[in-house]
Image (cartoon, rainbow, N blue to C red; front, top):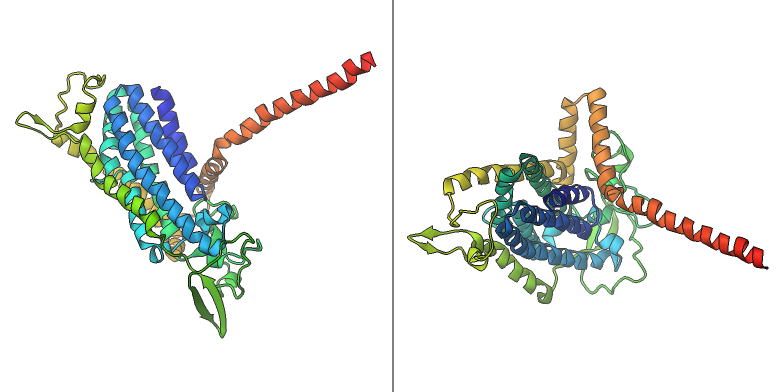
Length: 401
């Protein structure tokens, strides 16, 4: 069980790295976090597994409802088109248009990254600490994946809320007149070069906004919100802009945000003068923790703080890398130029670029699992069906008729 759990932890995290669809990125994140729960169960740390199930449920529900609010706001511009309304390459700058969704989404993101005192910090930290007692190899993978989690979650946050609204840089006819749509460490429409980020060409940096209105899908919902007019060299271009969801959508998001703030308290042991306030341990009193068979649910706070500093440092490192690469679009270009000034072309640079492209291919193609199923299972079954059809019509019917 622990082997399946640790594989799921790493696989889900790597698949989330290059996704452009916001809901798909959150789905692979859920897969990775379920792997942490399975890892804890396999190690015999049942309390930690259930604790993480509870805290992750509130945080991830908050993120999914937040993504729904984001998609709802994007439909104002692109219409009902999941390929566009869920594409983070067309988002950016939404913090100015959906501030409440932005705050709650950031809350869920920080919780999933393992930043104290939010919910997932307490449960994930227990699993990470218990992994050292079970297997150092599993522990290294689990802790490294915690850094990946912080990276891809802040990648989602920054691509969605920071910078500029990239949909206004996209030509819906399919011709990319500007590179903003694919500006990402790993993106679906980016041209594969030896550079992780796409620089602007000289002939593409003249105009920041297209001069024509974009043809939206025919099944676009009726827009009743006001528009934003941008003057551009004596020519006016009219754009719709996103808007915050109504109270019907925001109320459950607000409630989940409160739980994300405080639900971690149910698993924090506060044992003083014989009074046990660890609610979660009382619920699990009949169960046995195989990693801590003689534990009285008390906590060594010095040991806890030492382990917490390491886990939080790894999370902040992942956040820093994501911020360095994705925040905001022009800063990212400057950061890329800064990196390139130190890294010269050579065998090591070429090898590094190949590694990045390999990670992108692995992540965006979903570990080639779909391709494997299509080739070996679907293709094999279709081949067998065609052979059976041929044998029945040509051989059996041919012999009898």
